[in-house]
Image (cartoon, rainbow, N blue to C red):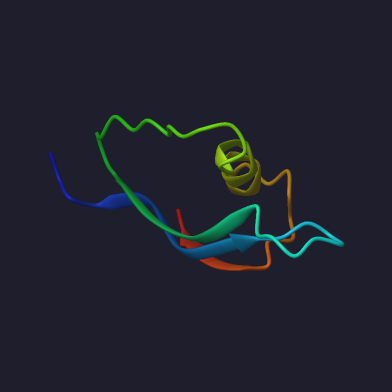
Amino acid sequence: MGTEAIISISKLVKRYKDTSVNAVDSIDLDILKSETFGLLGPNGAGKSTMMNILGGIFLCPRSFSAVT
């Protein structure tokens, strides 16, 4: 098992139009090769939004950098 990150996210931010609150606010995340990963949180925490950004459904996050 290596420590190579297969997904690496730095400072992911997403804000919807006409709102003053970020749906996703400065997420940093590394998922390592062969790692089992779970994303947990309360309703409205931004879990689906983050996954939609990673999947390419939302193409306009406010700011982020990612390496896959």
